[in-house]
Image (cartoon, rainbow, N blue to C red; front, side, top):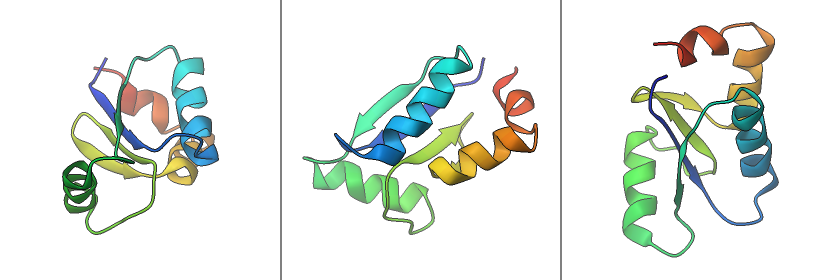
Length: 85
């Protein structure tokens, strides 16, 4: 499986939905909480091409967007191939 990184904040419903989907897929991920660290948030914004909302999700270093984007990939059957090695 590819490395999955998800930038989050606590109690964010979109973050919870994205993590729930990834967990249902049986993949591990690294969660990066940006709520208390402005430097981590700046790094997220830079990596995400200026997007400031959470979650921001990266699969194998590739930015896939937020929760809606992740669910859209899954609905189009494009997520599983991205998760595979």
